[in-house]
Image (cartoon, rainbow, N blue to C red; front, side, top):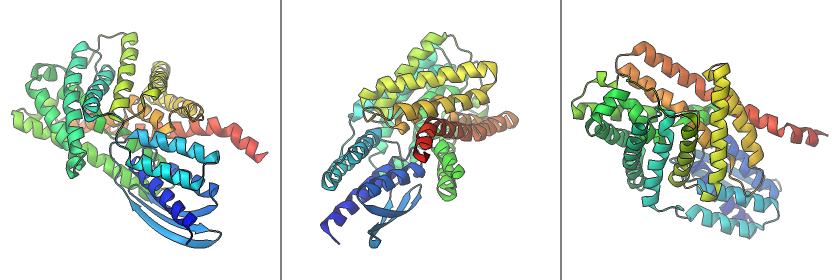
Length: 410
């Protein structure tokens, strides 16, 4: 094995581990990017990629040189690393040497978060406040969500440094539930506790995981997609269990989960302004470089506006589907430049805006509260919505790349 081979093995193994840990777009994109790097440096890969596991066999000039097994558990994404990998891939395509590529990849993998913990806690509060008007458009919902968001953010930065991070959805939902049912009891009963909690818990609602899983299943990656679906569902169950534990501790009853008055008082202009606050919080929470805030805000606002306008004429499902198609087209066009954010950074805002995961926690809570028919309806809405978002984005991607494919065929 030559020195060049060892350098390539180091590069591809580290890149695989980083991409797997931050695999918001699913395993298909991981394979595509690894093959892209290998082809540039004259190598060939056989890849088996699951949601938490990559097996890579490396060949050089038909000679088998290495077999690598990489394991990593996807968690709350640190999207600065994905952004850095995108820039690295662009540099590789434009002639970066193998040695320099490996050196940069090692720095990416060990780079600390770009924002300190205290700022990420504040970011989670902004994240919750910005999303709150999409749940209940009132000032009360906004400021309470900001307070509850601080609790979620603090729990997140504490738990992600140890093995208890696996239980973040359970612990966060429990403490947010306790505070909601005690400090903000009257408001929680008035709105419905789950609706008061959702903005603060949105950091751990697995809408992007569900949509990535749907994409993997549709592309034939059945094992990876099924495992990711189970993981997402367990995350939702943790959150519901946390809320139920909070009900037990505070002496409330499951009837407390009744829906209250969720009518809003904001006009559309204020809601769009809070989408920008949401994107600011998303940047801080998920370590997205602040240079991407403008693109995230434009993308999220366009997604929301398209969904709302189309839904007024047709219905929520078609509105979501058309918005997802538009998101796929816009994201693919907007991310062609190396100075623009990767697609997954833009997509994650769409996943949150289109609120796939929230339907799941609403449905499970309604069922536990005794509203079986209504809760089942919400669960079915979630089951239909998350593949709708994925299919829409996939169609948008195909539309935006059709011209390039035709040129290649010609």
